[in-house]
Length: 243
Image (cartoon, rainbow, N blue to C red; front, side, top):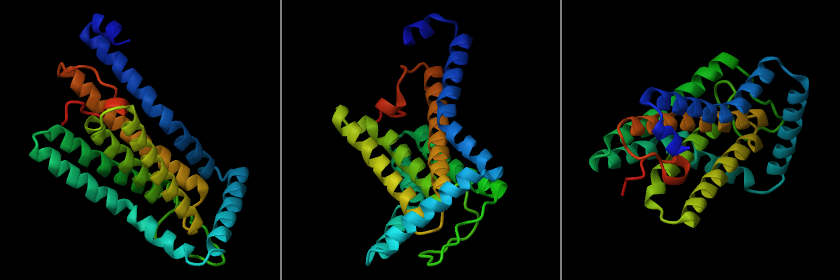
């Protein structure tokens, strides 16, 4: 594929890359868009499923002594502000090492994710669960989950920044698995604590991944336009030359 692109004229190569970028983003956007449509349409099967899962996870959480307190602490440890601070720290480190465009990418990605979440919450304006024994209260609308979206954005963004420093397939696979485990845990915790529906957290994860996919694809397009060698971000990171 790379050799085929290199034989084509620059305009055509850019068009193909942008098309592939669109497909990559769409892959993660489809679940979010589908859930958004179903939530806005108040699709009964989805609402029944969400209600059943909320009750199930909530009952399990309250049945274990000390578990709600653990979830309360853990969900904030991995909350949005953690990923914002880590993104800024990563940007400062990159800026000082001369990787200024990558530093900007880090800040832009986490910022766009947060603003996009707020915009969608305002648009959909879905009510949060109302459970008999609430373990936590949260302000604002429910769809999509800000914690789940921030975790998906933050973990995947940090992995893309760290991949060039990880040598070998195994460390890189461990990094992705760790990111996935943290994201799934955060998503689960928000439902178990009774502040989100399952569809909220699934949509948040999907939209977070779509945001990172979009910004990473844009960064890769810039790299190639600058004459740098083509890279596969999820295998090598957004900037493979970082060391």
